[in-house]
Image (cartoon, rainbow, N blue to C red):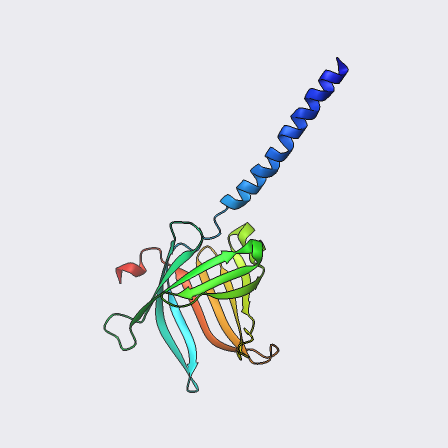
Length: 186
């Protein structure tokens, strides 16, 4: 009798143990790392060109791809009719389990970046992470680094580059506020 109860208890523990692990793994996978990016963002891009600061109005429309593995970011630089008006599309895939970010402009090759802080960012859905692209070894000596920060109403990122991995220079600053509908009426 004791053996039968013990056997039932062991079977119950064996049955429940892997199931709870798989439930927690599945809830981890269901976390949508992209949900706080989704929407329309209004802001600007600042770059240093020929010694002077150039500030261009910029709008982002961020949507999640159907497979849920990446986001599509539609960039609109400037205003329609203005000199420099341009539209581009970039895809961003965040892989916190591998500490990676994959970027590519529509029609171009994918670029892989190693990340720092992406796992914590994924847990919270907000915050800051850094992505860095090491030289490929194919004669490339420049190191690119980007710092991303996402809050409920603001989104910003800064691109930098370095020739030695020690000194970095800013190549572009991007700052946005979430569009609440007021900006769309202008």
